[in-house]
Image 1 (cartoon, one colour):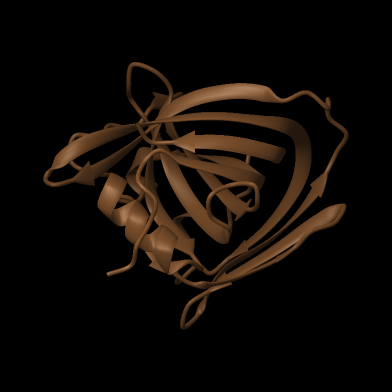
Image 2: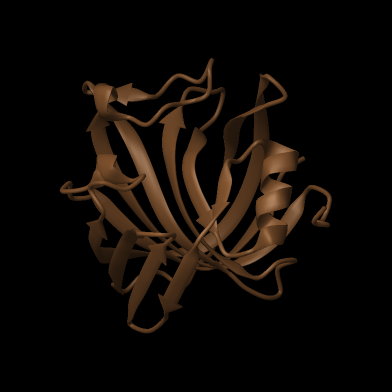
Length: 201
C-alpha cells in the first residue's frame, strides 16, 4: 500500500490551462448527482497540464480534464486525469475519489511550454506560449466534486497564482480518452505561474 500525506495537501508549481465549451451530449460521464453548468446550451470543460514542484509536499506531473458543475461556489468534477506519481495516484483516489491513472508525462519549460502524455498510446500533446501578465498572485477558491464511497464528496481548494494569457496549441488523440476534445479549439488559455495550492479539508 502506497503511503501518502493526509489531507490537506499543500502543493506548488506551474499550471497551463485551457477552456473549451462543449454540447452537453458530448461531455464525458460525470459522477451521479453532479450536474454540469450550462451556459448558452454548452458546458465548460477545463483541461490542464500541471507541474507540481518544491516547496510543495509532492513533486510530479499531471494532465487532467474537468467539467464545471453546479455548486454553492465554483465547482468542477475531474473526469480524466493522469499522473506520474504512485503516491499522488493512491492519495487522490483514497482521499477524494479522484480517478487518477499513471502515464508517462514529459514537460519542457521556457517561453513556450511543451507537454506530452501517453500510456500504451499517446493521449495528448500541447504547446503554450505565455503572454505578458501582471506579477500579482491572484487568489481563487473552488470545490472539486467526486464520487467517493457511493456519495458525492466536495473537497475545498484554495489557490494563488500569477495568471498570464497564453496561446495554446493542443493535439489530442481522437481515439483516446480525451477524444471528446479532439479537433476543437479552446476558447481561452492561461499560464498560472508560481501557484500555491491547498487541496482538501
